[in-house]
Image (tube, rainbow, N blue to C red; front, side, top):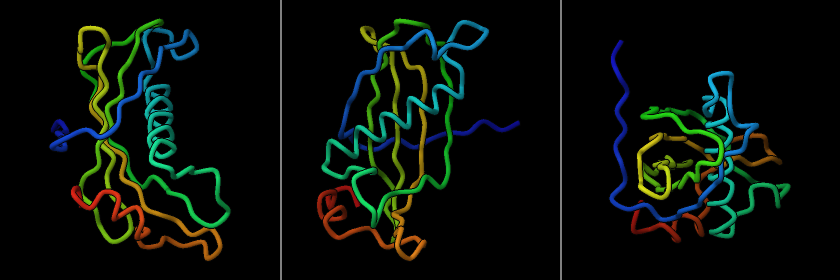
Length: 143
């Protein structure tokens, strides 16, 4: 089976650290893939809050994740501090890709590289919508 490779952005624009909880572990006593996806979603949420776009603070628009790729490099265990670096790439009319580089801290051992494609979604019309102008302008140097 061919392995997936991810392109990385020129720069990561947001960093957040999450401490691994016992409840994030699977029967192998390391972070399960399902929990890693949840941790990536938490980092995504925190990134959007950081830039002033609260995904849950609107009845009109939000984002929808359209695809996900994760490549696992090493195990992570309870009490590990995981640094989630977030970057944006590949803007299109309706969204972009969030790229995540997850590493153990201190030390920087790479745990996961991941991508979440997303589109903006209009909840009133129940349809995807173009990237809001303010969002595109905020990241004009990346688009």
